[in-house]
Image 1 (cartoon, one colour):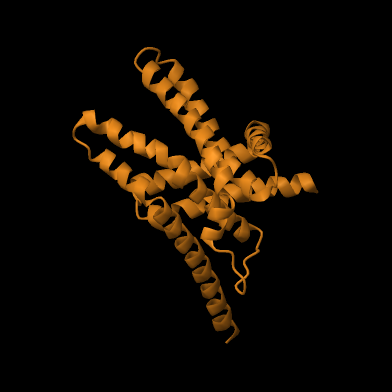
Image 2 (cartoon, rainbow, N blue to C red):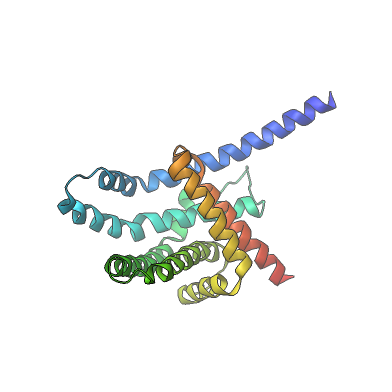
Length: 226
């Protein structure tokens, strides 16, 4: 009897976590649906001359949609990591979306600009200086981890915008363990989602990335705070 109760309790807990991750991830996908449709169109585009007509709206929509939605996703992940889920008075995804929209939009402008510069450098130098590709690869990983760390900083600290940017940068280069945890976990999840099991993308990919990234960040925060 006790084993049966324990099994049912464990099954309920797992089901609850699956629901949290999947529902939040679906909301994140829904908010980014225009970007997703443009990316799909880009993948199946046969005329290379039309690339610019798809890339430009994607770049424009990233600060407008992707960054605010991803900040809301990290805010929900913060609830889960800190075990702050309140079923009586829950904070909804859209509530976090509105709350952090301005900061997320500004961050989107900064990070999208940095990504554009990096991608342009890769495109320009890839056929001219192959030795630089390793450097650009390292810079890409650093920028990716810094972007992820910024989302964690935004939802956890009440700072000015510039202070949040600085904190995310210092965290990225100053904490090798957090850097490795975010980079490796993200790399594995993205590889599985893109090449092995694409169904993860609409159901769990975003939520898993946010949860694991914030977990690494929060572990360091608690260690520093004592």
